[in-house]
Every structure is written in C-alpha cells, then in structure tokens.
Length: 113
Length: 113
Image (cartoon, rainbow over all chains, first blue to last red; front, side, top):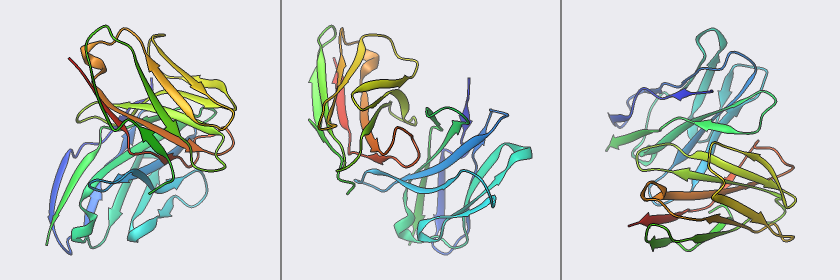
C-alpha cells in the first residue's frame, strides 16, 4: 500500500529563516502530489500541487516544492518564513489512475517572531 | 473559508451508538470525500461520492456508510461506535469526480466514551 512519510513532525524556526519540510512516498509509478496547510483555527487548504511538467512547483504565499522522482520526494521549501506561516503542513499523494489520496501525518511548524 | 460547512462541530457519543455527520458542499461541486483524522495523524480517506454514488472507498469497515443527496450535500453514518472512532471527521468537496483540488470543511470532532 502507498505510504507517505513526513520525517519532521515538529519544526521551530525564527522569522526569516529558510524552511524545508520533507515528504517521501513509496509508490513507484505516476503520482500526483500535494501540499496542504492548516492555519490555527482554519480549514485545511491547498498550498500547491504537482501533476506533470516542471518538477519545481510554485504555490501560494511564496512556497515552492520540488518533485524528485529518483528520490520519491516532494519537499516543501520557503526561503524566508514569517510568523504567519505557523501552521500544520500535510503532504498528500495520489497514485496515477486512482483518486484516493494518502496523507502524511503532518509537520507542525512554529515560527517565532 | 471554503464554502464547505459541516455539522455538528462537536459531538460526544458512547460506545455502540450510531452517529450521523453532515456536510454541505461548496456551490457547484458534485463530489464529496470524507476523511478521518485521528489526533496527531494526517487525514485518512474513508470514501468519496460522485453524483450520489459511492466512487471509491478506503480501508474502513462497512459500519462506515454515506449518502450524497441531489443537492450534493452529504452524510457520513457510523454504526456501532468504537472508542477508536474518536477523531476529527473532515469532508471535502471538489469538481468532476476527481480529487484534484479539494475544498475542506472545518470538521466535526467526535468523542466516543
């Protein structure tokens, strides 16, 4: 069965620090990849997604993610975090031909002002 | 805010009881997916409905069932509640029978005693 690993469960950064959150998946075929974010007290919302094409994907609020097929990875990055980026971040994967997403367990990010 | 609403926001039940959770989709969306999110975990796919038919199911027993109505609102029913059913239940609506971009509701937090 498909599995998604987010190795960093809790990350604490100071404002202006760079961020990279890891996401690895187990499926070897075609995949659709997503990052979702849940800000405190808000709904889960889509940050960015990759279906095909340029493996470097730009999302909202200055986030980007890079799909590296050989490493089965889809890491999320932001060059300079802000206090408002404090949230829970979830990686999700859908195997090609399916519509059932598998989510990672999430990474809690706290940014100190 | 996504336009997806869920009711109730919180619910307490006892083991063996039955529960019905409700979801109102974002306007124009004909697909709804339900997820269970246990504490400290990512959302786990329960099932999806497209135009009132179940369109896919995750690894959940038959006591988890659902309905989608002509106005695309949806219900999740859980029979014979178990302690491990305590979780946040999320619904997400989308277009055209895919999981491409899902819009999540705020969730219903269920506690089974």
